[in-house]
Length: 143
Image (cartoon, rainbow, N blue to C red):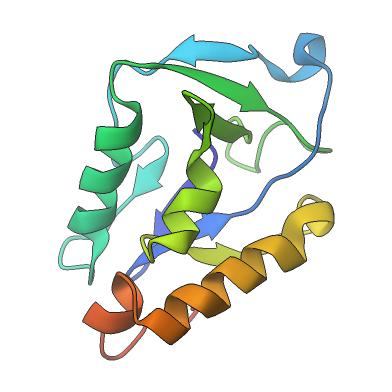
């Protein structure tokens, strides 16, 4: 999914934005076979709110056809596909930030066009103490 979701003590969202030719990056849609820790969400055991975020993500995408859109870089340094994910018209990346199931991690060059949008959603989630913002003390260093 892309979100390349990773965590240290909570879930971080690596924001990848824009569009890249499907011929270059990968498919424009796919069926999610399963949500696994090493693929789209990487969790260390004991992570604050990590299991909540995994469950939320699984409930959104598992077994469903997702639409994928790409930015400047199609893959990260580990060869994982970087794409925005939407399912049934819902922007999964944005929803996870809004619900406090992820925090924004900006890794240039991707993400600049939607960076402020995601940071605004995160600030709102923090103000509402949504998800990890109300559950984790201390917060993960990257958040």
